[in-house]
Image (tube, rainbow, N blue to C red; front, side, top):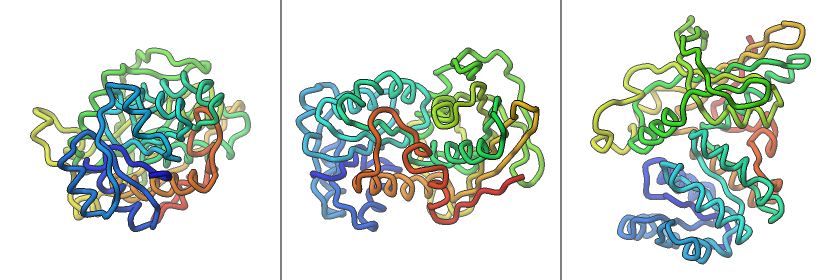
Length: 327
C-alpha cells in the first residue's frame, strides 16, 4: 500500500471510488473501521486492506505510513478529516477527500502552513464537491475584468445516499455563511434567489458549501455567496439511518447535475456560465480517482490547494460527459 489508500471504501460512494480505481488500473489498498466489510471488499477487489479507527493518532500514523496519497471517502468528514489530515502531515502523505462540508475546508486552511512545511498537499473536494463548481468559478472569472462578486448555485436532483444525508446535516449545522470583503461572515439574508440552469428560473436557497473557501482561494473574488435548488427527495427527512445506501445506477443516470456561476466585475458587467455533468455520485468516482492518479504522478503543490489551482480550470471538463456553457 505504498501508492493510494482509500479510506472509507466500504461506504456507498467509497465503494464506487474503489471500483473506479480498480478499473483505472491504479495500485491501491482500502481501509476503514469495519473489519468484516473491509475483508469482503478486499476479497472482491483483490486488494490489500487495513482496519483501523481514527481515535488514536499513533495508530493512524502507523497504518498510513508508506502511502503516497490518502483519499478519504468516510463521512461525516467532520469526524474523519482532522485526524487523517494531521496524520498525513506528520508522515508525509498527500490528503484528498470528497466532502462538501465547509468546516473541513476551513480546517485545511488552518493546517495549510504545517502541511506546506512538511511538503504535503491538502486537497479536500475532489468529487462533485467541489471540482465542477471550483473549475466553473475559475472559468467565469477569466471572462470578467477585476471580478468583485461571485454567486454559485447548485441544482441537486435525485435521491441522496445515507452518508451524504448525514454530511448535509454538518453543512446546515455550520450555519449560514457568505464571504464579504474576503472574510467569512454570518449571512442574514435568507431569501431565495432565482437562477436559470437551462430550463427556466428556479428558486435557490442560500447554503454554506465548501466553495465559500475554495472559490476564494481559486479566484480571489472577495464577495461570494452559495445557493442550492433541491428537486424531488434530494434532501430527505426523518430517520436517516433508514435510508438506502444510495441511488441505483438507473436513478443516477436519470438525474444529471448542474451548477451555475455568476460573476460581477468592477465595471458592473455580469458573466454567467453553467456546468452540466453526470449525476454527482457517478461524477465523483471519476474525478476523485483521476485526481489521485495525477497526484501520484507528481501533480501536486504543498499546503491547502483547490482542484482548479492544482489541475487547472479545465480539469472538470476532462471528466466524461461534462460541459461548460457560457451564457
